[in-house]
Length: 189
Image (cartoon, rainbow, N blue to C red):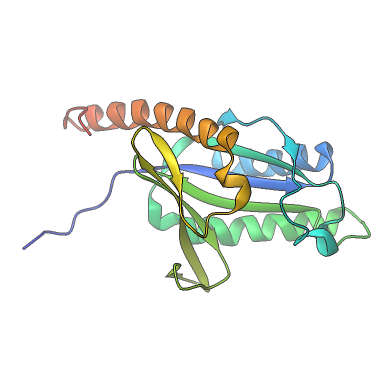
């Protein structure tokens, strides 16, 4: 019989959407105040994979991804999703704009073998984690690369996105080895 044990800490990541660079910067300031420094930031690219957000966010959306230096425990993701939803609301209240949602923050976490996103929406592949929230395995790491699932969002399937998260995984792997060594447990995977 297997014995329950606490999983290793994971790397907090966040996908962000906004229709201008200033809004991305303001969201980043809120996030770093709460979760600490960002140690990897993707290039900002146009988000043209869907018009799903157009009504509430406007046209010309920009996409970026952040990875945070401080590791978290995976069960914290529900609380973090609630906090990022509150940040979105705060930014919406502060920016008197014709669109109600100036920024979309999608937190998740990266481990050595998966990238998982938090969401408020249920689906057959999502797992409930409490507080009205679910997690979705978005990418899996196999054969030296991140691989999408059939439900993976189009922008997470892009080569550039997967390359960014491959680099983040490399940094996380080093962090995890150092964390394990600090516990006296060696650095193996």
